[in-house]
Image 1: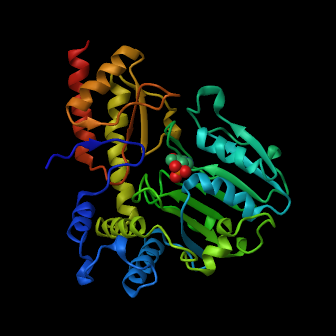
Image 2 (image 1 turned 135 degrees about the vertical axis):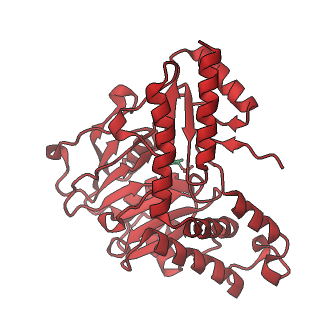
Length: 359
Ligand SMILES: *Cc1c(COP(=O)(O)O)cnc(C)c1O
């Protein structure tokens, strides 16, 4: 079997052992005589999967009792609407615009109230996390929103904004379970599964319980956190198979030693690539050092033709999906939890050779 090193930003590489386990159980899940896709979500077997997945994510992320863990659909993009629909009372929220996803989140909230942009890094193609001026914060904001890791531009928040009693809401689509997070500092955390957890189709929302139950009157039933909290994520049919695969990934994370161990590994992986970029005379990273993401690493040669040649030759050599986002150009290596350090080291070796051959 030929597997490539897949540096896709999402959907992205999954651990091989997870895919193999799913393959073994594909047509007959643990003696049930059927696949997980064919099972009633109300069955005992499926309850074991969904509640098992919830227990694992609670354990791995150390989620306090006063938070709900919801398995939803619609992607992180639907959370851009669910957050304001469920949290707006004064109809005001603060947003920091650190990239396209943050901008889209703010725009969507603006449909239901006032999304005040307190800071932006658009002036330098989102290559840094802006400094915040508390004087710009809305005192009676219903929440304060950040994108914790910026998938497209490769920045991340290393220090959380000080928001006092205003609930902090964070999009963690591309860095969930990549490093230890103190969940209690947040009102809501949300993530589409397809970057660091599992297949597309599942969206995870971790919501402080006191923020549930007072949605705007126009909020559709399916977009209310209360609906899904009361239904334990089975108000309607959940994305059953995506939840099953995610549970296998959570088991894999646990076997790897948990999130703290993965954080160490992710730091080591990122260091291999950033150290190379800092010392290369051909390649360089596009982000200021202090705000670099551990998950998404954009880089360029400064020459578009050379970038194209690199992406094409890398693909030939088994390093795929390295083309950068169209708004940044160049390359981007997404090195999520499932990317082994050998993959990053092999990529760096390949880059070294490419640099020598193209001087
Ligand atoms: C991919 C991504 C999104 C969009 O996710 P969907 O699940 O496709 O809606 C939103 N925010 C961030 C940070 C992302 O990386």
